[in-house]
Image 1 (cartoon, one colour):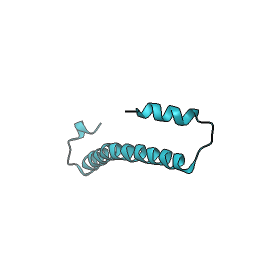
Image 2 (image 1 turned 90 degrees about the vertical axis):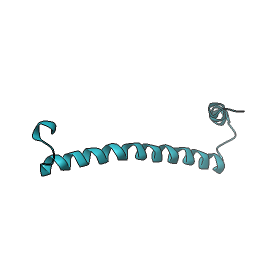
Image 3 (image 1 turned 30 degrees about the horizontal axis):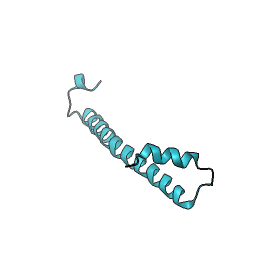
Length: 66
């Protein structure tokens, strides 16, 4: 079984030119990375926004709103 690293090294060393299939593969990898990053960050941002809202409306005691 060929590893992903080997596939990318082979693509990198190929001097025949980049085909549209390779562009599509690269675009797909970038899209997956962006979607995973957004998924991970959305929870953190959502939690921070909820905590800020709770501090502003007085739901949390002032000592925990540092």
